[in-house]
Image 1 (cartoon, helix red, strand yellow):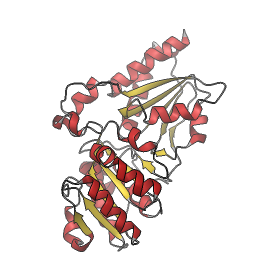
Image 2: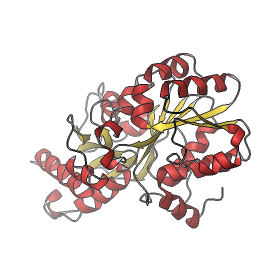
Image 3: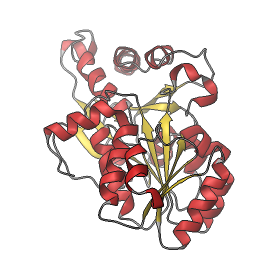
Length: 331
């Protein structure tokens, strides 16, 4: 697939699920080992075109997520590269034991794709929200966890996963018309965080859908004259697209900031915030860490934007939390 401005805009319109399906269709042209599996979510996974073009390389297991992982593991043992797709909460929670056994322990080269993580399922409600998936999977040995910030990065993650011989979980977030973080092609590397902008007053480390919101929040902060004594703050923004293995060096390079902020569309327990806290815990001198994510409660369900508002994950509310915390440190 040629990456240009048109490609980036088109993928963005499709959303991360559509971008994944388009990417897998494209890379499967040159790699006959790629097989797509789904737990009765072909269209939702963006796999309609894949199914039509490669019917012998498409498997619908039905609503049987545990079997999905077992079948994918068997295909991987036979030398194939299976991509197994279903909603992120079902793949991480319902099939967690199978993932631990076949991917963690046996190291089968299965690529898990968690659809509609965070609040992307909107009015489907709490039963379909994927807000604990990273926490559930992060402790499993030998499992790489990728969390793309936009649709170009979905392409990068899907392609990179096909070129590695290790079990991988790709966490798709957001809805259609996904905001564009990367306007141009860039070098992506699993395990290497992306520095979007540098700074030394505040370091914002974000993942998935929240990278775009973190960028906007930083812009809002610098329009607030009450912050930093009227001066513009120097804000570092880091895209943590790889949750595991996490880029410890990039995180430790943030320790000179006065405040570290982690932002994620995931529970504040066990996700990016916890990963960063674990990384810096043994350091003698470190700034305060502000955890911004899904609080430890289940609120009433609603559409996607409503849920972000409820949990304080809009750019305006992220900026407000950061300003309040920074002012307590300054004073």
